[in-house]
Image 1 (cartoon, one colour):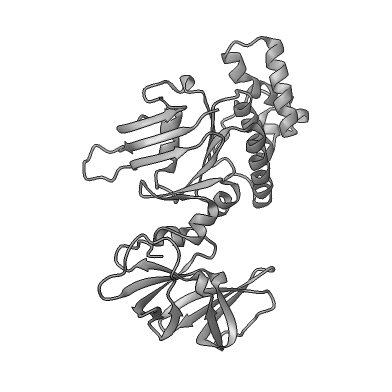
Image 2: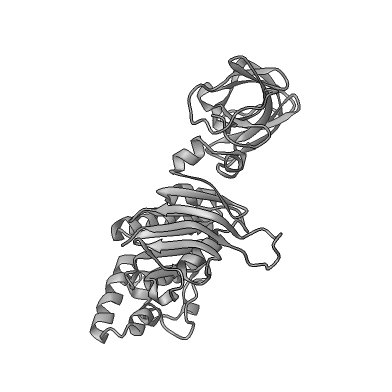
Length: 359
């Protein structure tokens, strides 16, 4: 297996100089045996970054290395990577067994060796009984496993996954996430996984690389990007519901939301920016960092969204709208007034002009 390095990688598809590049100066180190997720909205450059690693696109500038050696200019077949697509890309006229076998035939392994490897990976993924069937006879989840088996049987240095779970239903997607994480750990291989689904990223990744408009926004463990977002984009993109972002000002050791809700400013954390000279800041609060309590700061209830295991309560504090995560039995009526208390440890501050995290 091997680590992967992106070194100041750029890619622009349009010839117009004023058009934004699809990938802008991407520098990223992926450790050997790590499962790294490239996360971001559609058009952020994550799939382009993956395709450049696979050799399906070449960077305009910069270098991409696998195991310390540059792969720029190498054909995809010479990079020793395996790519699983969102569409699975199975050959419809071949059985599952022959689809899995195909990379081994290309390598001209003996028939006995091909059979041994196909049987082993089919048992690993629990699809031995599906081997005689063609793709049209398989469900989406079964096709996904066959596509995974075809990648695994090659025993590549790096696995590349381009939103492979997007076509599965919600229940199967959750189940397959667990299988994939377990499989990656058992194989001990490096995996780069592309998704726009932040829940998928949080549950799968050793580390997450968040991209927006072609630029890397933050790299860290799931806990790091959730608890300490580097800017307002990451704060809003990670979490469901996302972090509440409220306009406020500094006042000594406190921050004050426009309506007069006073919160203690955080003193720890990871400083990255500074508040403006006028003291204006953006205050970040996760929905679970706010409690409904008697005697708290008054807020008007706008709506209540029950989700079985929890309730999301939409409230308004002055001109600011925010969401509060509460226990399932907390059901204030719309139009009523409740008291809010924020956990001081949950308060995050961002520069009001640049959006960079202050703490």
